[in-house]
Image 1 (tube, rainbow, N blue to C red):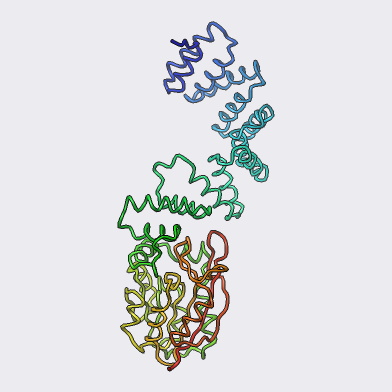
Image 2 (cartoon, one colour):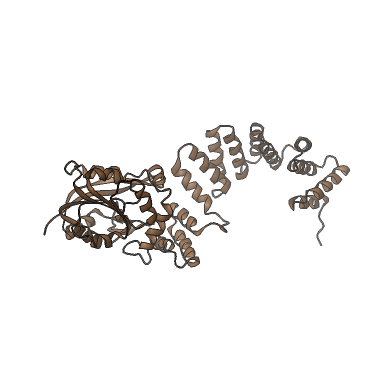
Length: 431
């Protein structure tokens, strides 16, 4: 049976949280050997933990004086000082620890944290990066550097670092949905699909889990997003939709629509106008000057409630857009579908329904996300469909439209990067 030294036994009690027993044991060791460096150091740490800094700090300093070449003790002293808000001496203690052992990622992170609190931002950033050079997946340094970069407005790298931190073990208690989003942000689509698959196993009827699994795995891709998915996502987002889309994501839908409609005769309030997929009604102020009657349609009752609060619509309906259009033949002079066709893969039915709902000579203005090179139609890992322009133009022609204008646009930001798309104005011809 192994025998523990008195110090090892005292430290084990300390580590187990039996502070009173540990203190008694440390003092017993020091009664026999007042220069026992480890007992001095850890008794000082223990007393500090117990709120007795005036007793504890001199013991830590005594241990450092007896053995100044021990990197861990300098780091412990820095942590003691940091806990009291003494960041300048804490930084000095961490710096001394790093002089003795520059390979310790934890101390680099501690040093960065002290510098950050002192307002030495560039030096703190360098220290955090030193930590990550030594231990790339070190969660405290990932989080701290992410927070610092957010303060500096470097949101792209900050979000990557935050996602890297989030996907590190342990994963228990972390929602599969958020793990999937983080992996998608990092470009780890197989891992994202794995988390969405686990989420779907937990909630077999969850339409959001099913849709994002298809988006990240390429399996069982629907021809359009299901009604259940759209309703669930946008009902959940209704309260924060405007602030997030316009503020955080720099959504440009209303401005893009205004630019498209500038090609039409000046608005005189004589048209029957449909805002298809109206959401909270962000485009309503652009469309109202054209409208004798402005109608909004959206699948999400939560969004419809927000749109109603604007007071600009004469009619609002919670309905699926294709079905609504099919039920209203030749009812509109202008239909605007901003940021809605991104939830349709196959455009044939929706464009045919648009043509049916427009009067001859009526116009449709809409946006789509741009497909990547070599793609025609694809459900991206974002959960939105992307379309090649040639494919959209062919679908418009088949539906009986002539294109009046078509140009590339930036629709919004996606993970701090521009999301590119196309804005089109088409006229329904009489055939």
